[in-house]
Every structure is written in structure tokens, then in C-alpha cells.
Length: 399
Image (tube, rainbow, N blue to C red):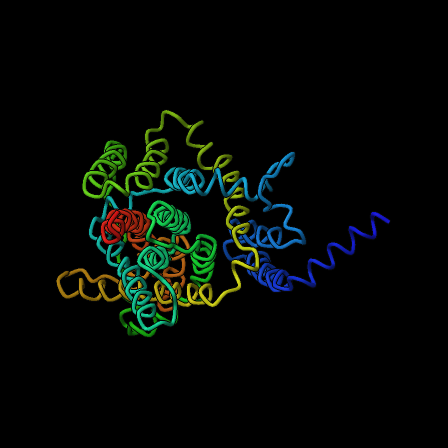
């Protein structure tokens, strides 16, 4: 009898809230992309299964704490992982330990391309505000900033700034900020996974065949160990002085890089790259997916976030390519403008896409290391832009 009542309870929950079934379909699509297509599976599989778990009848995994019961585990991850910035920062720690900044150090002009690609952030941000002005969407400045950062194709930074903007709304009595952490995070990670699909048509549209065939000789300048050690230290100090709000992201990432480049703490470096990074990705993915129950996710605003996020990502790609073409007007040794598209933060996916296109256009053309320069610079650029927005937005709102 009790079993029958429990069974009927679950069926009744589906009948009352059919949005759960729609979210199951979304989760299945993301699982298909991650498993069958092998696009960013480390991120998409935990996120998509988190979506599935957040949309089970009665919401046991996302329930609030009640007398005699603990909160659902996904809600626990969100409260103590996302809302405290713990998970995004730990991802940056692992990312720093995995990143080799040698291509950017040996060829500093590629840093400019990484900075130029951040134009997509502001294109989407301004677009969000314009659409809100005409009444299509109900986005304020905090939401527009969170949506714009999707253009950097950097999931942890997107989560970081979206969470901070939500907290800003909670701290200001006259400001109502929507909770769009889950939607922006899924959009950012989805576009990271779809880099091989989104970027090639844009690159071909903006470049000629002869430009795509430009061969960039790779004669790497040897980067000394001293330079590799000094880079994360100097980068942390300079960016933190110029943009203090960016110091959590940049500082933690550079600490991870210092563990790697110092060469004296291999155990810590290996842990940051492997065990810690793997655990954090699992928890982060489930936490992000858990922010998306159907009642929250299936809204017109969420569709708008995905559309604007795509515009942001496309604009970042365009800006990087155009900047590379402009730089060619002033440099004797021409840059293959395709590497400008690698200025987004999808490391190393964007650089690999550029290399595959270069190889297809001109067999034997190896520009991967040239593309890695703007690619890793894009990570620093997106984190810096996030810091700028975190400094400017509260001032506009009168905080």
C-alpha cells in the first residue's frame, strides 16, 4: 500500500510539473553531445546529469534543509561551492597548473589578440541592455554583465561573475537581480563544446584563402626557467594593482602555474592538475546542473541568454580575427589571422580548431603554438574583464 502511494506520488509530480520531462530531454541532448560527439565530456556529462538529478520528482537532491533533514546534496554543492566562489577558483588553480604560458611569453604580441577577443563581452553586454530597453528582455546591468562574459568562453569566470552579480542584487535594497547562474554557466560550457562548429564558418567568412594559408614559421625563443617563474608573480601583481577585483581569479590561476613552473613541488602540481581538478569538475558540474530545475530554466529569459551568449561568442571570434588583420598592416612577418579566433578562453579547443583549419588549407602548416599564445592570453583577458565589470557595475548601481 505504501509502495503504491509512493509510486503514485512520483507520477503525480510529473503530471503537475511536466517541465521536468522537457529538462530530461535537454539533459539527454547534452549527454549525447558529451558522450557520442565527445565535445567537452569532462564538463558536459556532470552538468547534464546534474540537470537530470535536479528535475526528478519531489526534487530530493535540491531540497532545502528542514527539521530533521539535511539539504539535498546538489543544493549543498551550490551553497558551499558556487556561492562561496570555492569551485570556480579551484578550477582556476588546476587550469593554471595545466597551462604553459611559454608561447605567450616568447611572442608577446599574441597577448594583444587575447585581449582583442574580449570585445565580444561588451558587444553582448550592450546588446542585452538595448533589448531590455525596448522591452524584449528584462535584464539589468548585472545580468547584462553576466551574459556578456559568456563571450570569453570561460565557464568558471562566467560562474564567478554571475554569482557575484546575484549577491550584489541581494545586498542592494532597490536592485532586483535575477538568478541566472545556471543558465549562463550552461551557455558558456555549451559554446566551449561547440567551438569546432561555431568558429570555422566565421573564420572562413572573414578571411581569404590566401590569408588562411599564411605560414608562420615556428622558431621558438627559449623561455628561461626564471622567466617562467617570474611571469605568474609579475602577472598577479600587475593585474591586481590595475584591476583589484580580478585578483581572485588571476591570483589563484597564477599560483597554480607557479606550482608547475617552480619544479620543486611536483606533488602539489600533479595534485592540482589531476586529483583535485577531477574532483572539482565533478562537483562543479553537478552543482551547475542542479541550478536548473524546469521552473527556473524554462523561461523566455533563459532562451534570451543562450541567444545573446552565442552573439557574444561570435563577436569575440570576429574581434580577434579583425585585430589580427589590422596587425598585419604594421608587421613585416604576417600573422595568420585565424589565430585571432583562438583569443577566446576555450583552452586548448580554440587553438586546435585553428590548427586543423590551417592544416586543411595548407598541409604541413603548423600554427598550433602560435594559436596557443592568444588562447592562454584569452583566459587572463576574460578574468581581467570580469574584474573590471565587478568594479564598475556596483558604482553604476550606487553601491
